[in-house]
Length: 221
Image (cartoon, rainbow, N blue to C red; front, side, top):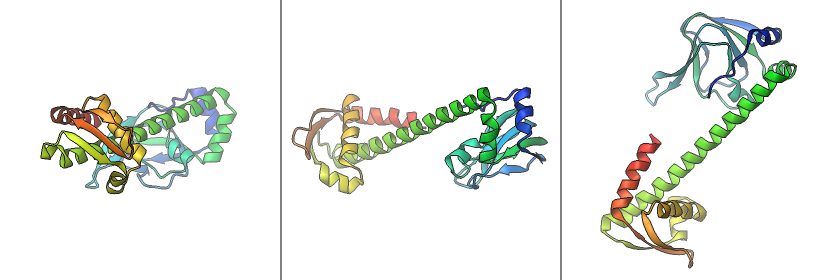
């Protein structure tokens, strides 16, 4: 997702409502995990967007070097900062509180439309990522259970009880069924019979199970 670019005329109008802040190279505008209370516009300079790995080290995921908005998503969603932003060069930004920014943007219809459109697009991206993460959890949990319980024991004709699985996996019956339907679509399992729920029967192809998992886990990375 690209940041919203701002032309000089819009910048001059917005500048009247915000507060100018300057940062030297290496200084943080905000850090990952901080409370989000300001929206920013980069006026000049280059910014680094950084994430922290499991060891606590920072790595760069993007840079901003044009006049554009940043830090708005966490403010509008009332979340903590999801990444750190640090000055790579001497930087000048315009800072706004949420209400001040919205009031200023509302006076510039074209710009306000761009902001709202960008927020909707970013929310859709978040929803898609969340949905993908849930799908990954469902399929990997069910698949590894099938491998451990049946494939490793060379059992091809399988019967399972949904209620027992929900207690074991901490998943809903509908979630387990969704994972099984996906595996059936991928031809990992076949002759899936759900007519006698909570009892379910199906057959499993060991070779296709491992082949599917390799592709699925690679796609996730």
